[in-house]
Length: 298
Image 1 (cartoon, rainbow, N blue to C red):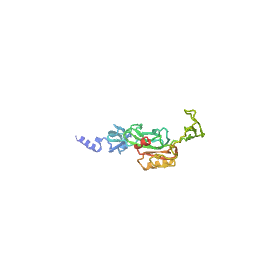
Image 2 (image 1 turned 30 degrees about the vertical axis):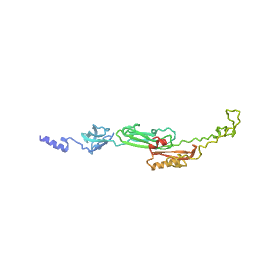
Image 3 (image 1 turned 180 degrees about the vertical axis):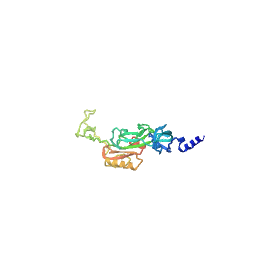
Image 4 (image 1 turned 60 degrees about the vertical axis):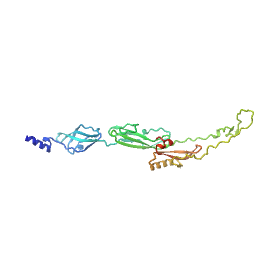
């Protein structure tokens, strides 16, 4: 009985009846998908042979058994309480930070995304579920490819554990070059028997073929005045610019100053005769209330 008591007393100080032990660290945290190393678990000079019951992709606390090997090649099993955490966000890689297209071109927001990956689980798939918060990515875009302006495409990615990453790029839609067409007024008949290109009178056919009465020439109606601007000529910016670039610069400046501006569009101004003049104006998109009025892709 005395020998047994002695063995227990020694075991408290040196390990039970001479059995070797390893002092492990408290509060061990392991990165999701990572590997355990001896220096992660203990400060003692031992090698780590294996860890029984450990799952690097199981988030939360785990009770595992570590098998160490000391300098005498003796294996030592030790129970360890550790926690697995995922602290790494998904990685979003874009092809370009800025894109330029011409109004009317086809536009695919995903075409500028090179890859969306999780550091551990690999590629993440695109989702159409705007409420998604795990294992995938969504694209939010206000680009209206039919209207000149400056727009933003935003990519939001989530890994399997809900870590979130965001990235965005700018899209500038350039105005489509206008084809210059000439008015054919000189070749159009006024409908009263006169042809303006010749200045001559042609007797129109009438029910009374024996009549020599010259038809009354009606005065042309003044429906518009070239160069005169309609009341709605200016966009909601209320300003007119001498060049397309001036309009773009103003739109960018105001967008940086006013956080309520979602995006903006610029257009060339037409007079009351629908003739384009060499002036431009800017419309600002402040949200859904402007979608219908200005044709934004909200």
